[in-house]
Image (cartoon, rainbow, N blue to C red; front, side, top):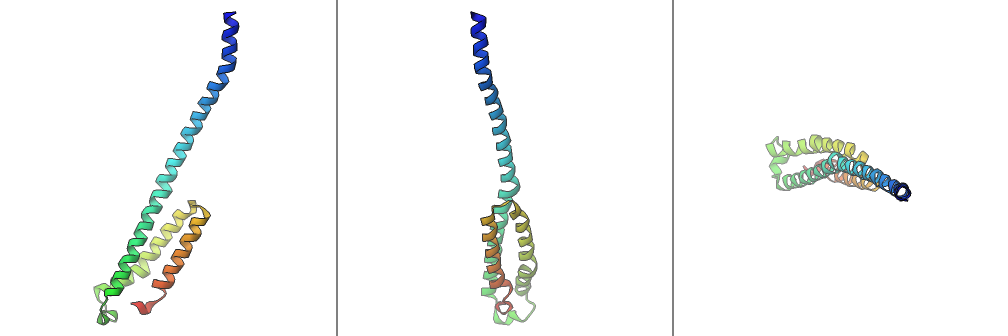
Length: 129
């Protein structure tokens, strides 16, 4: 009788425990995958987007404060604006586009629209500088 009870409990409980163990392995794997996504995609993307925001604000500030005489000269301010628009902003865009491969489609599209707007507003308007 005790052996029968033991066998019955074992046959009923073992699949549950085994299933729970498998679920724990799945949860750990899922957690690890999520952590990797956060560390390898989300955090670098967020940092790059904040860098983009700061770069746009800096460019705006430099353009607004550029003296009319400095617009034609090779002043340090003019050279900084040129470097931001021709080098740093396109480099940052490439970096963000590489990261965006792991974004969802809607976020990629939103970023592309944002960068197109920035390109049209800042980069494609040399008369601003």
